[in-house]
Length: 167
Image 1 (cartoon, helix red, strand yellow):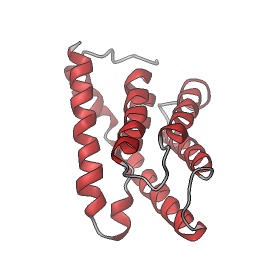
Image 2 (cartoon, rainbow, N blue to C red; image 1 turned 120 degrees about the horizontal axis):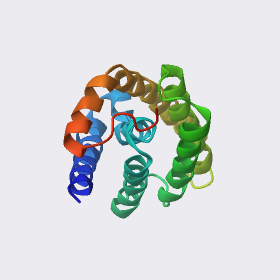
Image 3 (cartoon, helix red, strand yellow; image 1 turned 90 degrees about the vertical axis):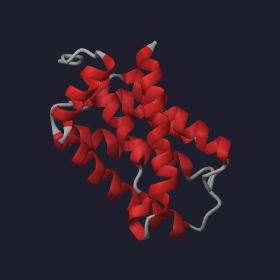
Image 4 (cartoon, helix red, strand yellow; image 1 turned 30 degrees about the vertical axis):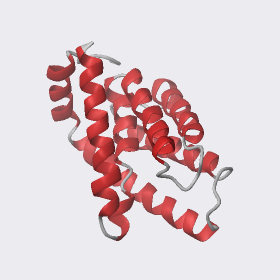
């Protein structure tokens, strides 16, 4: 129960940071997909349930607050979650930087391909925005992967998670 409460509070804090602080940054820095990157990290390193809940919760809150250009963000994000879970469990290792990066990129590209069906933006804006977000996703995932041992220790203390979850 405590784990769910802490995870929910952390999700809400990260969601607020992304939607209020990061989105107000100048230029390319406003496109950092922090919740998406952290969700993929959680799916790869900590446990599928937290990462899935974070991603679907993100889509639901984006739809609820009308913060996206498309009206149904939950649908593409749910498809991206399915791809992230399948690739994390069966295709890419969480021990390799390239495996974590490939999981993040494949789920994000799936998200973008699904979002194409719901967008009303011009193609140039849509493509430019998602290329910027993909670049920032790669940077955030690289930072998270390099900090993985430290994050794992913190999460172990906070959530009482097993250190050998997928090993």
